[in-house]
Length: 200
Image (cartoon, rainbow, N blue to C red; front, side):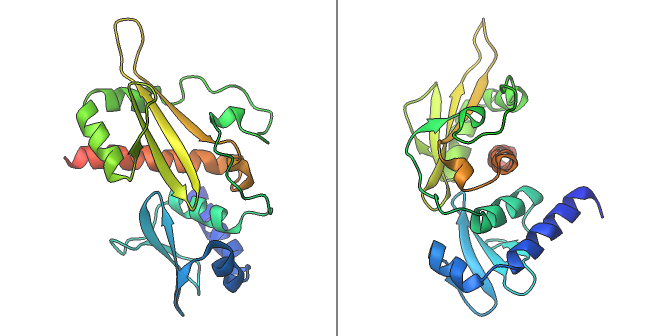
């Protein structure tokens, strides 16, 4: 097993240690005897109540590493202050962030990919449930889980600057997930957008 599989399996075991009825009450989850049903980035997933496996409900395929760790952290994260603030900031400016360096150019490569076909990029954002907002050259707000959301702000390249992309998270995001999980959620969102574009 590689480290991704080990981390995934540990997350599933952690989920199984929780009172699932309490999770159902806390998040208002649809459920049956075999599964809990969650909506993550405007897509439906089901979680096995027996082994914690997370499946993409629309295809029946196993969810990817980033999806699994994100969904299970959102469901099971410790703490009671799970209220959105309505204020948005980059990940390294969030309330409660660890003492790490400032993010610089983290999304340069994927921004350049999106800049090559901005119309397809915008369509893919809408397919992922993105709602247009007036930020940057293009901006979209995405529902992550429940009331938690993230804003993608995109600037096209010009003669002076390369294309750039910033993700602005609700300032209270770290009450919902670990700092590392924010990057899993970001990777899932941007990867899903690119995947939709590639299928066009």
